[in-house]
Amino acid sequence: MQHLAIDPSLFVQNRQRFARQLKPDSLAIFHSNDVMPRNGDQHFPYRQHSDLFYLTGIKQKGSILVLFPNSPKGDLKEILFILKETEHSRIWDGENLSKADASAISAIEKVYWVHQFQNVLHDLMKQCKRVYLNGNESQGVDDEVLTRDLRLGNELMKRYPMHKYHRSQPILRNLRMIKGGGEIELISRAIDITKLGFDRVLAGTYPGVWEYQLEAMMTGTFLHEGAQGHAYEPIVASGASACILHYVTNRRRCLSGDVILLDFGAEYANYSADISRTIPVNGRFSTRQAQVYRAVQKVLLETRDMMVPGMLLEDLNQEVGKMMSHALVDLGLLDKKDLEVSDAKKPAYRQYFMHGIAHHIGLDVHDLSDRFSPFQAGMVLTCEPGIYIHEEDLGIRLENNILITDEGPVDLSADIPIELEEIETLMQESELSVGRS
Image 1 (tube, helix red, strand yellow):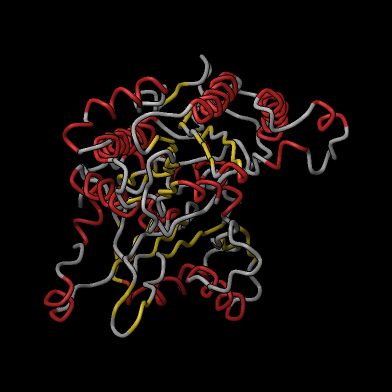
Image 2 (cartoon, one colour):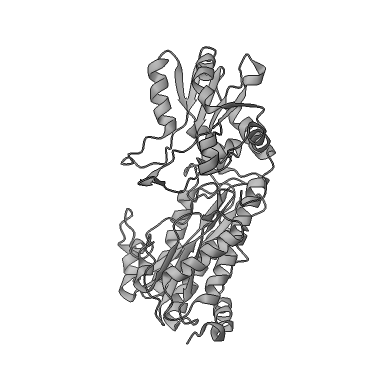
């Protein structure tokens, strides 16, 4: 475990909040993610299913959670199943959690081995009327991976067709949008580590450095500080690549006169940061780059002030569209006439700002959420305006992470350098040490 132990009361509260939303005589089942093969006998790095982690704090593969709040047997209201360690697994993979370990992490008293799951579940199914199944409803329609949760669901519907089946995702979506104090602390720690990675990049950028070298600086810093690594594939996009929204190849050489768009965030204790910054390769913004940079930052600051309880994400996007339209006119990219004849379904500003202004973050970088739900205290969202000018090979995006509170928005990433003058000063202070010219 790379991070400090998490107070299990967080997971107890999450389970209690979830259980209160279930219909009577219901049980709910949550599976770990599959281990995904890479090739040969290798696998991709394992990452626990966010919903199971949210409810238990357990990261170990193969784990299963069953919640049965109305169980007639008082000790079977919460059951955790974990893999039993074997001599082979201990030699090849190291120690698994013991029952006592799993109980201490999750605060679940009843812990069984996974090989007991089917027999225990059969007994529970005879006592319940409804089953809540979990599925990744954020998946696209073309996604082909059938998760362990969905495979089990298909099996149960065949074996127990007289039961009623329900979805867990609507409940979890509403719960996970609102972060408790412990969650905000973990997100804040991820952001603090992200800042250290950015500090390292500022000091290590110079004409001729490769994008992947800057990525390596962040990666090393994140791991050194106790993060699991990147919360998502980082974007290190210099020159024309900064206009590619999901550029992740990071294989270009950074040239003097270009800017580098960085979209990056550490993952700490499974919680994500999501930050964007744009910096000049040679440590100094050109007049045009500075002009666009200040326009983007102005939109960010004005948007951040509107991120208050009651605001709808769609309404926020509409307001940002108006601000961005005026900014683009001031930059000479649009004419006022373009705004007058703009198609409502494809407004003129979309030529230079193609994505939304915000999304929820938490256990996932695009966290489980209802985009039609008004902002509420405890939500954490990104604020990420950008301007992408393909004809000038110039892309600038700035992104901070904002906590919604009843007293107004709190910028959790306020300590990460963003002011143009501060970035130039920090880069120039390290000029001699890295040979920037």
